[in-house]
Image (cartoon, rainbow, N blue to C red):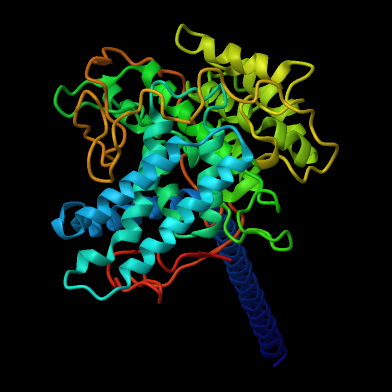
Length: 506
């Protein structure tokens, strides 16, 4: 009996141990499951957080580069508009109106002088002609092209600005473009439909105004790079324009754009302004747009790595030189807190040391160095600037009066050696060379082209290809409200020709 009792006790103890071991195993299993589940949840949470962070970074980058997307939309809408108004160029029914518009555009622009009164006078006359043309479009007519005069006028005016600023004789460094720039800026203040059209023209022929830098793969050919850079190619010969010609044209377009931004919209600048209301439309973002442009251009350069000593893109020096020659004084006096660090810390200390010093880049690098390092840099108004239409509301003391207001040899602006009439649908060139570019206003001189045997732009590829800030134009901080692209103003009879008609700055 005792043996049986002992056996029973032993069996009971073993059962208890087995149960304890089983319970312990179950507890460990549950703990392991809990640990695995917690690690999985933590990993999923980390992945979700990283995905959210990357999405935020991507969204921020896209927002920061939205200005480039906006510019591409303007270019596309310009193409649509120019296609829709083509019948006005060809129709015999509107030949008299077409000729009158051409006479107004070329005739008025040829009378511009380095004089504020004259600039405002010409601006007023162009605005009145535009308004009259718009009224004529509303008169019931048999042919649809008879309602296209207003948009044709705007496109022709923008075309002439491009032709004049792109001319080989255009003296951008001498300030030749200020009267023309002030004139179209003041016209746009009264005729807002000009803003997207002229902006689209400028961005088409000069991507640096957006700004953007060429983005090409490491194995891209010289031709690919030149096309990305914006160099013009002769459709017949296949030759690219010379780099000197490209630089000259780019600097002219940068200068005219910068001068447009510098235009003052005070009571002395905005035509028809009684002094109480500022202009509602600011072409290319105005003076604030100039500051935004400089910030964006510098951000496109590969400057984030302080240890990076690679050579900056070849167009860096000529573009900055042309832009700062025009805007430097305005930026220094109106936005000193923001401009000074960009100038002294970024351009002088980080850009200058990395400029291309080769045979092609050295001259431009030297020009930029002299411009930004002088003790009196940006102290006086730039040559050619019209004081009444330049810096009128500086945040500090006004800059000294400029010397040599008008470039020598020019009584009217942009008319020297520019006898051809630019029309929206025909190339304007004494050589009559067809360009493969979609914009017909930049014609390659057949006697000044060459094939590229090697790539003179070999410096390291720039970073930050595209991306922008939301704006009416890529230089403005304001947002754009856009309805359907084919909807027109209520005041315009034409219902299918103007994709810009409902684009308004807010």
